[in-house]
Length: 205
Image (cartoon, rainbow, N blue to C red; front, side, top):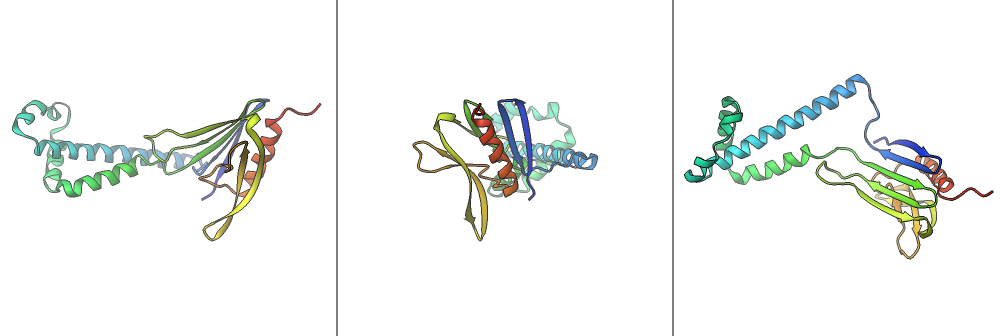
């Protein structure tokens, strides 16, 4: 999968490097495709939620049913009939794992975004996006006085050699890998490495 690098410089002393596996194609067909995929996810999630509600309703006690028949007030009767029919055809033993699988696919982003924020005189912040829309990104800030070195190294990943950008932190045995999930190609790493080192420290007069 091709990785795209975006560089932003909010100020002369700050630079943000962002690498993403998301397609950079912003053409009209690409936007339409992304919109349709989003609508399909929403409709699939609503349909599955209706089936779950119908299944819970059919399995409830008569007393609970008398206090929880609110679906008919805001849902079309045809949708309620389809949900009830679907709920009656499948047991909880199969519905539960199917629901978990489908919802995990609905809320999965399908792409990864990682970034390195460099602030001169303060430090760097690494960020890795979460795989789903329900969780937050993972971030870490490393002060400048804790950074001993920034370098590009190579390692084996499976049966191939991959390059990675690493930060040596004072007092830590392991290095901090930048863009650990994506591991972009060497050309991107070299650009980030040069820019991060030049921005991190004050220029010599």
